[in-house]
Image 1 (cartoon, rainbow, N blue to C red):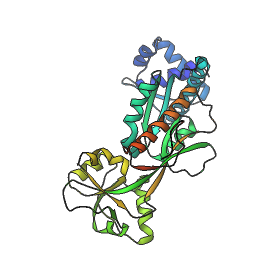
Image 2 (cartoon, helix red, strand yellow; image 1 turned 90 degrees about the vertical axis):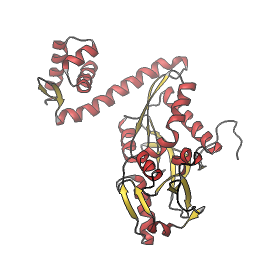
Image 3 (cartoon, rainbow, N blue to C red; image 1 turned 180 degrees about the horizontal axis):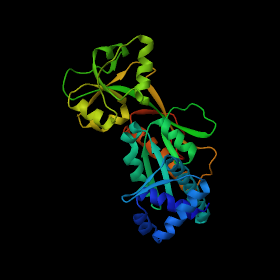
Image 4 (cartoon, rainbow, N blue to C red; image 1 turned 120 degrees about the vertical axis):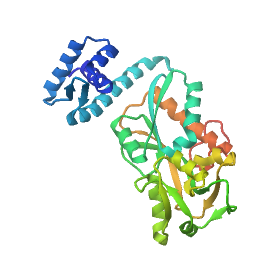
Amino acid sequence: MELRQLRYFVGAAEAGSLLKASSKLHVAQPALSAQIAALENELGSRLFDRSSRGVTLTASGKIFLEHARVVLADVERARSAVHESDAVPRGEVAVGLTTTVALAAMMPIVSACRARLPEVKLKVVEAYSGFLREWLQSGRLDLAVLYTDAPEPDLIKRPLLDDQLVLVSGPAGPALPKKLALSALARRPLVLPGQDHGLRRIIDDACAPLNIQLNVVAEIESLGSVKRAVEAGIGETILPQGAVAEEVAAGRLRTALLNSPAMTRRVVCATSAVRPATLARQAVGTLIHDVVHQMVRSGAWPARWVGDLPPGMPAR
């Protein structure tokens, strides 16, 4: 099995056509077809279904695609590590963010990376924490900012902050108290993500011991759409403070703290403990730490900082 066969296979899978892939990869179509056929013969399994409309992955092809991408990513990391002798971070770094973290910090992180690490290309992926952990372990991601600091032997987790969950209401209606008892949620119409979402599980787990029956009027998976629904007056929701800081500052949303220790989440920056680190990955990890700390310090992300202080930064 050769690296070029993996590149040809991934190129064909992404293009959906051998003709398009041959053009993109700058290789003649007969040579491309021959290399993919040789790969299928070595694996003993058909990777593509071929038709006049192009190629589609078989079940075996979908499985192999995930592994091929990891191998090629590892090769690229190795190449980048060799080229880093001049100590300038460069290359692609894949970063995973949970949706609530992305709402608060994606743009500051991407903007800071463009300014401070111009030779680094960020690839940002949004997903649930569970998916991000799996992709870190498999090598699809270099870093991930996710919830939970529970020890995992193959991951290194650097604590950043404790995120407070708050009740979020639209701009109209009665004034909200500064703090709200958890039991009061039972009387309020809520718009929440589905029960498989990590945020929803925290809410349900906090309410279950108190036998609080939530009045969920709509389930919406997109947290951006959840915020728009609340702003439109469809109901209220529960989100981390940082995820709605911009809308609260603009007067489009209002919040009340939920008086429950269960309504907090630890945010960490996680990396693989078994895969070698590149200079670019290390630089992006430091950048994320510094950017999030500055957001907490300035109030742009209302939360309690629990991480290390950047060098030269006085404690507050």
